[in-house]
Length: 253
Image (cartoon, rainbow, N blue to C red; front, side, top):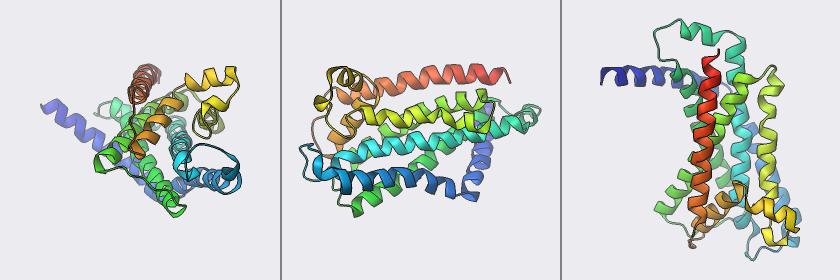
């Protein structure tokens, strides 16, 4: 019981340190929001009229994919801050102190959940101004944020690996580009049945599509079917594998 209390105390200190970095540079959250919001505006007001999705308002169809893009962009800052800690010798200083080693990483991970959560809320508010409407109730919205939280956790541990392995600041954030690109080859922007067979096969068997479909169905109060279980399976599997390799990389520092 005592060791758990000390661990939680150490984690709260590391979390507070990481959150102070966020509050001192709120422009990072704004930067994360700008590109997804610009994409949402572009697709809704420029391309939306030419895209047939079976929905009255294209922003309702588009929003889940935009939220995943925002999270994919936001985790790059986790990798960058970890790289700076490693480069400046911060890890060595912490390791010389009587604190649990893993709490240093968890401080960054928990901060990622909070900062990306703020970005998600900002984007949803903009979507509401653009005409987004949802029939989801409180429980369904909690499910949406739960799925987004697990997705954020999974990607954040990938960001930890990148931050610990990077040799340059640019390299620390470059890993996020393929992740941001994944929604384009999924059902985030158009139904997969409009795609060529090879592209469709990839789109329907990568993690973004079931996550997008689960979120979209929850927000419209439609049956989610197996999509939610496939989405959760992807997120949990990625989290476990990424956590294992992140801890393995961290032990080498």
